Image 1 (cartoon, rainbow, N blue to C red):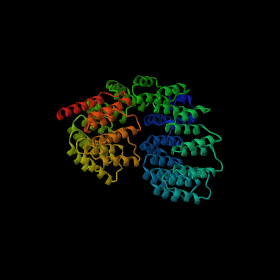
Image 2: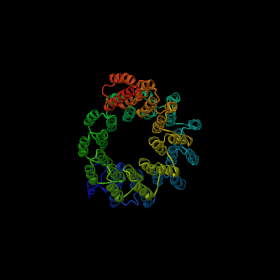
Image 3: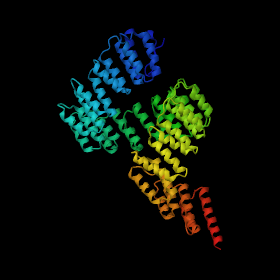
Image 4: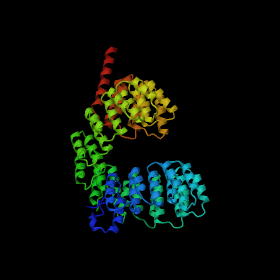
Length: 619
């Protein structure tokens, strides 16, 4: 029998060639790298045949830790229950598993009834801090019988994470002997809060600045939008390790500063796997496939991340399906994510046969891969096959249901949509909104509004769907009325909301109100996109304010498209002398945009015809 190997860096070897006393260490190394539940269970079965887990606490603890990281608390608990004499470390692992997977109350109960050590207490402080429940974190901190510096640091960090800098500072002042980690925590917290002066002061007070503390400061400044300061600290570092280099490269790349990221990457003396993959992902995100491919070809040891990144780059950019398939076929190992991405790529291009072929070849399918295939059939109008897939899925979730629900609505099958909705075991806001949308798409505004009023929970998407339905179906006053109700309900409008609101204003001729909304959205931090500008140009044009509309087009921060110019040209029909104004405007536009399409010239022709007809009537 072969030893199960998950990490490709560990060579497989027959069991009979591994001495019995080396088996625990051998399996522990494999368990440390396992992050796949299916593989983990197969490994567990093999370990059980080779080792007595009830008495080998060392291996059992690592097995339990693996299950916790894979999200299977049932398996983790079962392993724990089989240990004859669990130690404090065993309890720490189990408590951590429950906390990591969101079961904080259960973890807290175990914390107070188990012989765990300080590590469990501090982990729970951190867990509640990340959740934002600062009172629970404080309760646990105060319950610790003997607080060490790690516990103090955890509580300070919890305060800092939740924005309670005054309390973090007060707790810091109470500490008798803060260590370098404490000073680093405070410095990072102030950087996150935007207080660079205090961050620098705390950092300067660190007596022995290690590469870890330097890197923590680089990360703190970089991840909170202070890239220039992060870069300055990085350049001041007396020593740098791989983590330091990749931290600043990743921060620069994610903010779009690819040239700076590449410069530092090229200066990196020894490039590890993370650095190569970071710069590869940066070029992939930007859609620079040529440079990404060059980087990929230079990587000395290509990992599954490298292969997956390159494959995804071709998939996401579109029109590169052949190249994506080439990489997919060459990959030495494919996980479910890559398989599912290829199914989705073929589906998006309408190649359902190829998508289904890849789906059928998948060694393991989860609810995500099933849902992608179901959605492919649904979006392409094969509702019978999609429904059949839903019925045969081993596991269903709300995404599966709402995808089919949405397809029914798009294709006009409101009765089937309603029947599916009623059969759902539980209905969340997404399912309610999808059903409501199916009626708005098919002229059932009255039923849609009844559903809207009955919904137990409303989110901004729900409000937007109903407002948009009114705006697009000739009920502009109701759209504005509902928008005001949304504001009264305390929800913050987003970019989609304002498209519908501006559209309603233009249909009602409310130019002043449209201007106000356009101004308000900018004050609220929403940058107008091309749709907002189209609505405003059309509103101004309909009101006869062609000069102002022309000025607005000139101020657009992106390339003016045919729709904007056509809307403005259409407004000339309202002028006293439409032909003269239209000709004057057409001349300007043709000079600026010589490549406009047919719709523009059709509009101009209609203006000339209108002027001619009016001239005939005058005679």
